[in-house]
Each structure stands twice: as structure tokens, then as C-alpha cells.
View 1 (cartoon, rainbow, N blue to C red):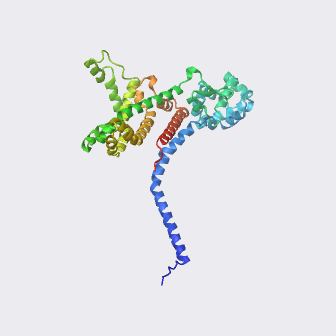
View 2 (view 1 turned 120 degrees about the vertical axis):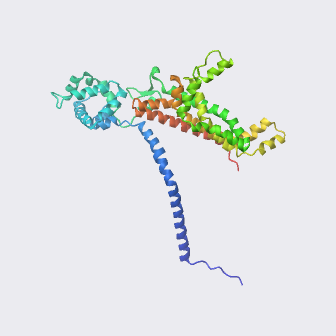
View 3 (view 1 turned 30 degrees about the horizontal axis):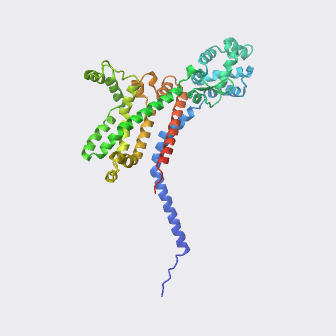
Length: 415
């Protein structure tokens, strides 16, 4: 006689489901607590600085913070008719408040970007501005300086009135807005940044290509040698990591200068009759950057090649394939993951290099990072520095997405 299995009572089923839900919630909570420190670290160290940089590239709040009421009047003004007495009265009142609050410095710096003479005009006006006008504020301002009666002065103030602006981003692309608000190219003698971006991409691409050409055979050698010999040679690959970047760059200046070891050796061997120009030009920049970034290409390639079995290539040769054909069609495709990782790593790091091009390159070899540092440390133009950095970030992300798309098309999913 077959025994019948009794189903658990409904209360028991409900209790089991409740316990399972509680266990699942505890598991998710524990997982969240494990990743919370890392997420907080990325938020503070990575997300917040990038978000701040992106905001600074469009931030234009200096005038609206120093002269809030005047900024509102300027925003509503058409810019074609002369400003009314209300403009002058508001400006007179808020200039004194800005001086007392310490906002004159940031206001003057922002106005300098529109017209270098506006800062001097504002500071001179504040020193001479009376508490009350003799007749009208418009006549008082015009008496202090005739430029306050010019329409161009107020038009420049109107450009600085909005809280956000595309001025810095457009300037980073050698563009500007004319008096009618249309986007136009700047004068040819002022076009700088497009060439700088193209130069940055060219240098980073050249360094990446040279590192790949040099790093691939080196990684292959390290992956195929016996473990003891490979580990010994790996020490020499990692040796640059143990030396300061500034020290390595200075060492290349000593080696590549006219009386340095490289030129002296070449002249001693009879290969050249006079010293070569290897420093303070593009050649010196490429040599030093390749030396610094080569390990970042070798290590990803080595980690991938070490996991590739040599039996595949031997089997192809035993079946009649030429050794080079077996290497190119059997071994090389398996290294694409390492090639991609090393290429992206070296290229992205090369895009942001500053010290090496600044010390080893000439004026025509400076990259975007040089101008970011210039606007940050010299002119305190944070908007322009943030705009250049933001465009460089966007270019990097676009190139990375294109690269990923090409890789995905060339390596279809395998079941």
C-alpha cells in the first residue's frame, strides 16, 4: 500500500517563505555593506571631481553672485537700446556691496575674459563712486568714466550675466558667439586648441603604437621563457616603477642632450658627425613617454599570453601550416584581449601627460594637459581649464566606445 506524502500546513509554508525572504534581505544587506566603502571611495575620489569639473566648464555665476539685481536686469535687456537709469542705480548699489563682501576679485576676473580693460574700469569706478549722485547715477557714471556711456561696455556685462555659459566650451573648440549670438569661428590667428587636441591625439597614438610594437615581442618572450628566467627579466620591466617620474624625465634630458651619452656614443662609433637634436622636440617626448609607459603595455599582454597553451600553435605547425602563419592565425587572435587592454591603458594615460612633454618638448609639443595646468595655476581661469579637461574626457570616452564596438564586431560571441 503506497504511502501518501502530507503537505505541510499553510502556516508552515508561510513561515518558510518569511525566513527565506529575511535570509535574502540579510544577504543583500551584507553584500551592500561589503561594497559600500568602495562605492563611497569612488563617489568621493572619482565621481564628485569629474562632476565638479563638468559643472565648472559651464559655470558663469561670478557676476550674478556679485551683482544679482544687475544681472537680472541685464538678462532681460535686449542689448540694443542704451540702459536706463535703473541699471546705473542698481550697479552703484551692488558694486559697494560686492566690495564689502569680497566679490570684486572674482567679478573682475570674469569680466577680464570678456574685455581685459573692464576689470580696471570697475575698480577705478568703485574708488571714485559717491554715496549719492549729484543729479542721476547715469550722469555720475559717465562723468567718472565715459566708457559707462558706451553700449559695448554694457553688452560685455550682459554676456557675463547668465549663470551658465557655453563660452568656455566654444573657446576650447576655437569658436565664439558674435554680437548676434551666432556661433562662429574665431580669427585664424587665435585658433589654438583644435591643433592642440589633434597634437595630443597624435602623440598619444604614436606612443601607443610604439609601445605595442616593442611590448608584444617582449611579452611573448617573457611568456615562453622558463619561469626563472622570465621572472628575472620581469624585474627589469618593472624597474621603471621604482623610480620617480620626474627623475626618469630628468635622466632622459641628461642622456639625450647634445653632450649626452646617446650623442657621444653615436659620434664615437662614427654613425654621426655632429650631435642630433633629441631633446626639447617631439623625438625626446616620444622616447621618454615610451620608456615610461612600456610596462603598462607589457603586463596586460604577458598576463594573457601566459594563459595561452603552446599546444595550439604546435598543432597547427604539425598539420602543415607555416610557423608564421600558425603564429598569426592561431596564437595572435588569442592575444587580442591583452592587446586591447594594453592599448587602451597606454593611450588613456598618454593623453593626460604633462611633466614629460613640458620638460622634454618644445612649444609645439605641448599637450592639452599643459594648457589645463596653465589656466589653473597661472591665470586662475577655472572655466577654461575645466572645459579643456571635459572635452578631453569626452574624446577619450568616444574613442573608447568606438574601440569597443570594433572589437565586438571582430570577435563575435562563441558558444
